[in-house]
Image 1: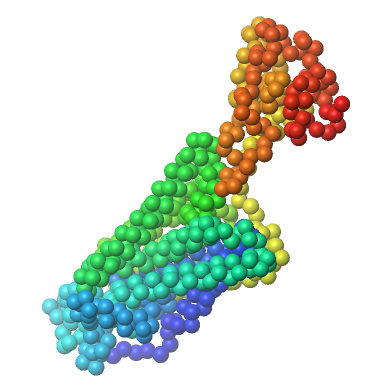
Image 2 (image 1 turned 90 degrees about the vertical axis):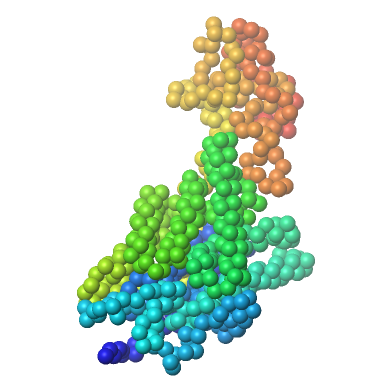
Length: 580
């Protein structure tokens, strides 16, 4: 005879889940508002923090879906976060799920409705008193058939049972919840678009920001971001449906949902990698095209905007990490040892990757995400101990420890996100509270102007910098016998890179704007349909510009009037020393 003793106290409180959901929603909403108001840095940081908390919540929910024999406090704690995986008991969703199951040829489970006649036991580690064949049970579809009409549940079925959801309704509940979540969010975005359009017509806001094509791209980007947020739940529930096979129609839904979301994310990752590699080939930095192409950034930036530009490929690791983790959680339910061992290896590899790459945009965000990954690793380590350790006292103590440090980190993240969200809404300029990323594009900006000005200054001082490198884009066609008469600064000086009617050349292609956009018009004074002439093209062969009496300093140059007359509109030829 067994009797369960309880003090009726539990760490499973629905208020915990609601508070976390509201804080995450506040963070994402404040990020959107800050983005609309033009505070892009604040919006990016608040969104990154909110997504870090949401990912941590999903990791703890997945922890509770494993079939490992874990202490009751761990089961109850992880149950607080199952809403992030779509496991939430709502009356209308349960009715729709049950109706669809029966309408498509499935048979509904009666575990919850038969509690008066069936004893349901949550899977626990068997004691030493269990001897004989009666202690051995075959586990099928998440339920173990025990003698005397009792059933033992574990893993995903245990999570559904604690949420008052029938086993056959778990997949459809998650599917409907994801669809409602995405649809409701897009409805809110559409209402914001409508209100913004009305305000633009009344002249209260900038009408240029309400362009229909811009909003269409932005809404696509928001939709793709929602798909990424729901992808862990999609992987686990769809793959689990392949094994449970509630009805043929639900299996088809699972296949369509998993393939479509995976294809979208893989396509996005491939496009990002191709864009970054092309940017590296042309501009020697992946940040140029990834950050300056506004249309591409609004549509696909959800996968790389929170990362440093050199770590653009990290999105591929994230998609693979989520998918492989979902495979073992969903398909290895009957074998807890294989499941938790695989999850442990996955978390170790992920922890090493984030510690080495440190892909996020600044130090604080890296610390936050590395802390989350470290806690995920510790959680799987403790579950590995729970799975193989026999002594109940040790597992109980470790269960309390797991609850304590997970609760502490969750509380810290909640406080950080709540403060950041409030500051983003009430501050006059929330961007001032965040530093710009180190790879903000300074490495890809044109240094032609600075190179030319340095050369002019060195020539005016008469002491050229010996460490200055020669401009690789200028071809020296001066005959060898006169090459020594030109100093390094003279070769990079604009006076030797131009002809009488030609503007100085730029190392960047004038047809590609520095900051691409849909309506960008180049206003660079260096653009010209002609090509820059080398010194030999406007100098007689064998005659050095210095020997012709040309002063190297442009401030004291009396002779190149033809160039100034033909290019008087250039801002480089205005001001003191140029007007005669």
